[in-house]
Length: 265
Image 1: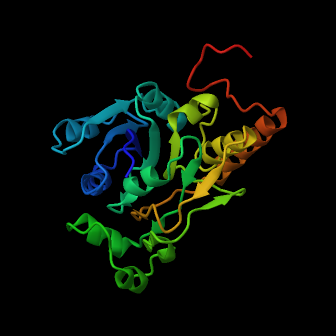
Image 2: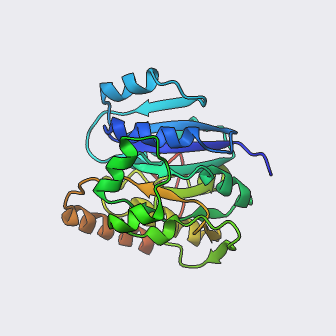
C-alpha cells in the first residue's frame, strides 16, 4: 500500500451531534496518515468548544469565519492555504464514512486525477440509530426496511474496477483532489454565495476544461448521509446557475476570486 499524506476537509455548520458521529467514523479509518481540517462556514462558539475538548487520535485544525450567509468556498480556500498534504479529500459534516473510505482514495490516487463517488441517503430512523449507538456502517436490511435511498451505493466491492468517466457529476461531499491540481485552477470560486448550485459543478467544469481525468469510485469510497431537513432554495439555485453559465461563456478556468487573490488576468 502506498503511503501519501492526506488532508480530510470536513465542511460544517452548527450541527455538533452530526460532526461527532462523522469524527467517530474517521477514528475507525484503517489508513492513518491523515490530518483533519474542519472548515466551518460560521463562528459557532459551541463548535469550537466541542472540537477543542475532543479526544481523537488524529490532529484537527478548526477554521471559522463570520456567519454572513453561504460562503462555503471561501472557508474551503482558507483551509487549502493551510494545507500541506498531497491529497485533499472533501466531505460534509453530515456524512459518516466507511472504515476504508480514506484507504480507497489513497489506493487509487495517481497524482492528478479527480476521484469521486456518491452517497447513501439514510432515512431518519436509520440516522437516529447511528447517532445513538456505536454503529458506523448500518446493515443493508435496516436501510432497505427503513426506506433509505441509494442503498446500492453502500455496497463495498473492492474487486470492482474503478472507471474513468467523461461525465463525472461530482458532489462536494465525496471527492478527492490532489493539492497540485487544485492549485492549477486556483481552488474554489468564492463568487458562489448561494446554496444549491455552482460550487460543485463549477470546479468540475474547470477541471475538465484543463484536461484532468475523473475516476468514479463507486463501490469503493462509501459514505452515509445523515437525514436532516433541506430548505427550499430554488431561487438561489437559479441565481447560481446563471452565474455559472456566464463563467462558462468566458471560459476562464483559473478563477479570479480563489485560492490566490493577487493574480493578474
